[in-house]
Length: 92
Image (cartoon, rainbow, N blue to C red):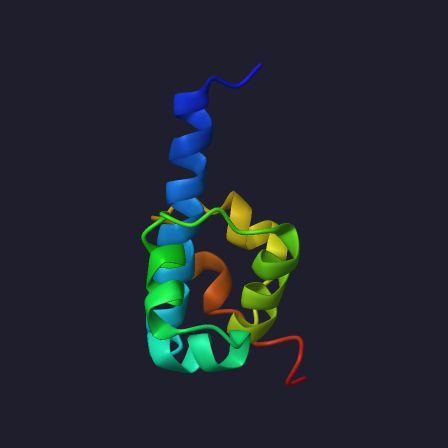
């Protein structure tokens, strides 16, 4: 069973992954907020790990960032580049 601390750390890592991929794509927080139909402030809270997001919201973010949802969750914050440098499956 995962301890609460482990879960909190995983959530923060996913938030870091989202931010790193967004920056890699040269997207602003405002851009993602518009795409998600939320305020920039609300989006910022997602990246900071302050907001608990639904699986649906996480899937939407993965789609906008053009990354696989599983990779977004699996990456440890340091190895994000491994899958964001790959050619996009969407644009192929």
